[in-house]
Length: 68
Image (tube, one colour):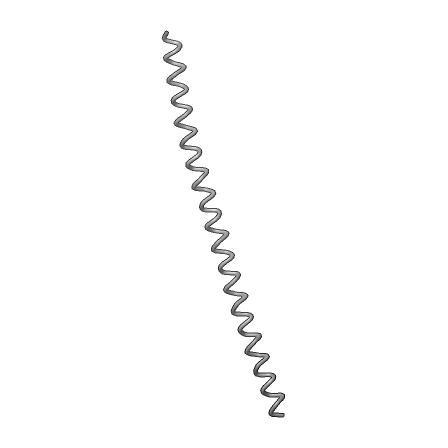
């Protein structure tokens, strides 16, 4: 009977540890996804700025060639 109680206590302890590990894993995955999203948004912003710069340069060159 004492052994059964000990085993049940050990089982409950293991279940609790599993819940803690699952929660930690979920938080790590969420943080990873958040970081990847931030990186993607930064890359998009940089690409947009580059595109705007190229469009502006092209427009300037076009205007210069028309006035030459």
